[in-house]
Image (tube, rainbow, N blue to C red):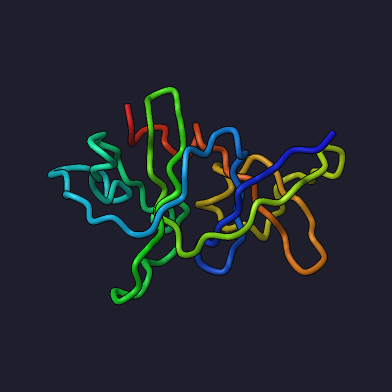
Length: 142
């Protein structure tokens, strides 16, 4: 059985989210900072009248911040708490993955990211890390 994942890059890593969880992928949107929020919560964006929390996936996954002159892209996902934006470095393609060929999360995945990766899919040239969206928003969005 196969599924489709929307892919994106965070740092040098390729990540994916099930297409059924993704609402849309859009370019950078200015956000409003939330006082006393965790550092992973970059702020709130206004998405056509809907207020959406923006989570910096670099910070959430334990990677260093992006250079200040680079603007992230937004991957808007549907969660049980409502829409959430993941800030990513670059948007990729929709790819098909085979559920039978899923590998466990290898030790090479950074420690900060390991708890948010639910599976790893092997491609010819790299690994695709499937993001556990519920885990990635837990503790940040209520």
